[in-house]
Length: 68
Image 1 (cartoon, rainbow, N blue to C red):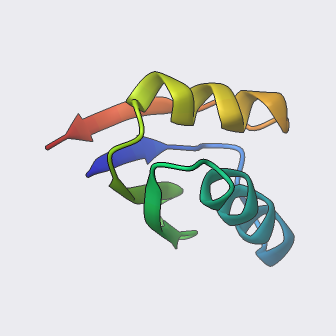
Image 2: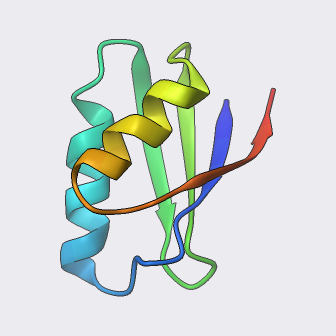
C-alpha cells in the first residue's frame, strides 16, 4: 500500500481524474481518495514512483507519504 499527498486535488472531477489515472496502472488493486486531506491511498504492487509519475502526467504533482 502506498499513501500519496496530492495537494492540487480540490473537487470531484479531480478525484475522478486521479482515480482513473492510478486505476489504469496494471499493478493497482484499489484507489481511495480523501479530498479533505488531499491524500490518496493505493493498494497493490505498483512502484510508488510509477504512481507519482502517472499523476504528474495528468497535472497533479504528488509526493509519497508512506509505503507498506
